[in-house]
Image 1 (cartoon, rainbow, N blue to C red):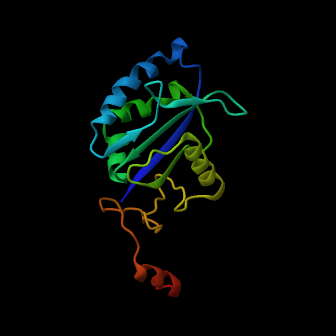
Image 2: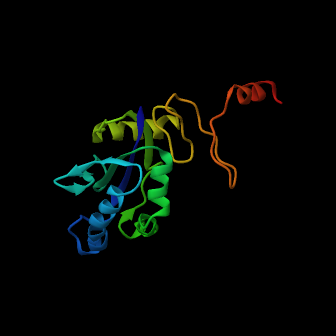
Image 3: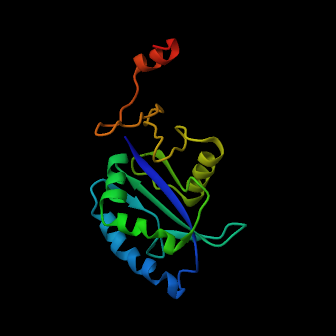
Length: 174
């Protein structure tokens, strides 16, 4: 069995102890509690009991790294875009500078795994350098556990995994 790991990074406008970051820092606890009870939530990276970690890259200011594991994409999507978390997401420009895109990477891990920050950042670099693949993919271009691409959902319809007939139809131009 596998679960979905996700990492997202954001370049902080100011250090976390700066007064302009107060609203973001105050939201960490409530968002953590919201995630912890969200259907499909499995695990999150913490540093000193606080959500996420800050890393200092060779260039630019500190990067906030959020690393979590979810049962599947639907559970992650519901939390990110359909819970009160979405309101904070809409206000992210208050706390974060523009970040090179993509700023989020997804990949499958064996159930019970806790990815490291180094592995997560390698996955994100792989996605940036090579585009979506089974090794690291994006929110919009996903892959199944067995490496098959997930076709985008049509409006109102579920996303689906192409089958062999899809491949042959593309090959012969039908």
